[in-house]
Structures are given as structure tokens and as C-alpha cells.
Length: 153
Image (cartoon, one colour):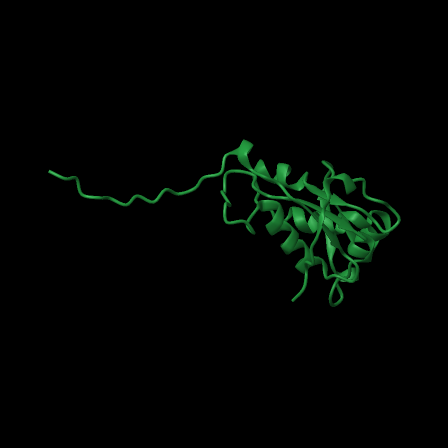
């Protein structure tokens, strides 16, 4: 007697050692922070790949140049406040313009960090983000980064 033929579909699950990573380079000149950060977060998580697996860091490396030339829409330079705790009995706070004057790369870094999942994988994902201002040269030419246009609507 002949066995009936059964079709089984296997769900692909990526394993941490088998993920192939690519390098992308993005120019942040005149890009809106939120739109650029959401596109970068998707690449860091690996959601742009068909092999995305939620519990594995499947993302690629992203190099962002000219982070000191990003823009906010509306009145966010003065209205947006960054707050943090010091351990004492009050919060510290500064506007986006004040933070941009001191550390321009932290504006995009914080926006991307807050769009990543809130777990241990987020630290690994965020370590693949490389930010450089316009007066810095990135040392990643040997990885042959692929130019990609992000933050466009």
C-alpha cells in the first residue's frame, strides 16, 4: 500500500551565527530626524529582510554621516525636551537645541534607540549604528558600505 504524499512547510528561523550582515551608508543632510530614525531602526532590527527572526539580531550595520545637519519639523528645536534622572530628587532637562549644540550625534542616537525593542537585543542592534558628524571621516571604507537613501516620504 502506498503512503499518501504530505506537504510540510518549514518555517525558517535564523540562528545567530548564520546571519549575513551588510553595511549601509546614509547621508543625513537635511533629513527629518524621526523619519530617518524609523528607517534606520528597521534596518538595525533586520525587518527589511525576508529572514527576519524576532529573537535573533538579524540586522545590518548602518553608517550615518553628517548627523550635525539633521532637521526637526515644527517647533521641536525649542519645544522638545530630553529629561533624565540623576539619582537626586529632581529631573535634569534640556531642549533639543541645547543637546544638539553639545552632542549633535546624540539627537539621532536617542531617536533610534527609542524605536528599537526594549530588551537585551536592542544593545546589540544599537552597537551596529555608527554616527559621524560632517568634520569626521568614517573608518569603515574597508567594509565597502552600500549607499542607501533613507528618510524620504
